[in-house]
Image (cartoon, rainbow, N blue to C red; front, top):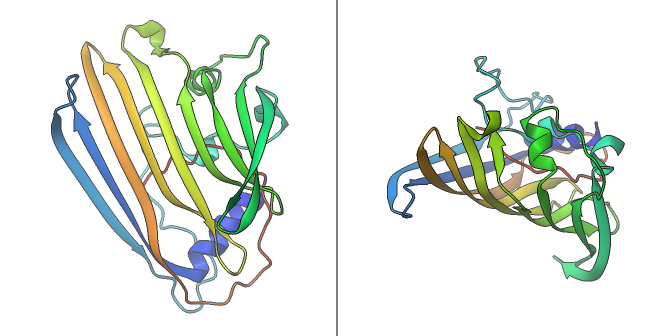
Amino acid sequence: GDEDENKRLFRSSYSFTRSKKTEYKNSRGVTKSVKEKSKQNLPQPGDASGVAEPVAKVDESKRPYEESDFPVGEALLARFEYKLVGREILDGRPALIIEFAPANKKLSEKNIKEKCLNRVAGKAWVDEEDLVVVKADIHLTKPVGVIGGLVGSLQKFNCTFVRKRTLEGLWFTSSMVWHLEGRELIVNRIIDCSEEIRDVVLVKPVSKPAMKSPSCSMPIWRN
């Protein structure tokens, strides 16, 4: 889709550094371990794909969710109710401020992804010209049980992310911070994570016009 093309062009045209810091805490909020990652994206001459190197297959039930797991479309958008609450200038560009919450109707809960979507609410800032979500504050409205709540549960989750637009018209998630409180078996855990993309430099001409994408998905990254 347009969003995938936007990502491909960004990765194949710009050098940048992506960093991630994750803190694992116990139920009292005491940090038990910290993991930090930093990775550079360096497009090579003649490489127009911008596609990341293939990674080994992993258990789908254990990997973190990604943006591609929540494709934007009528089915996803119909799960929510929206309210326009204002306008704001972000980075010199006008944006609409929209509050959203699960629709007041019976929603499908076939899997854990749908259970999470049915309990997500928040506020989004949508660029008026490109119709792209450029900022969002998202939170879980109620706990989500996993396998009946016996194996684990997601008790709290909130996330804030910001996207920026390059001079060539491509969008990228410049920063994201999220906080999670959950239970794995009988152990309560807290995770705080911050991610950012910095030092963005155009190194190759953008080969195609920037795509316009009404992106309303949650960009949960996986390195």
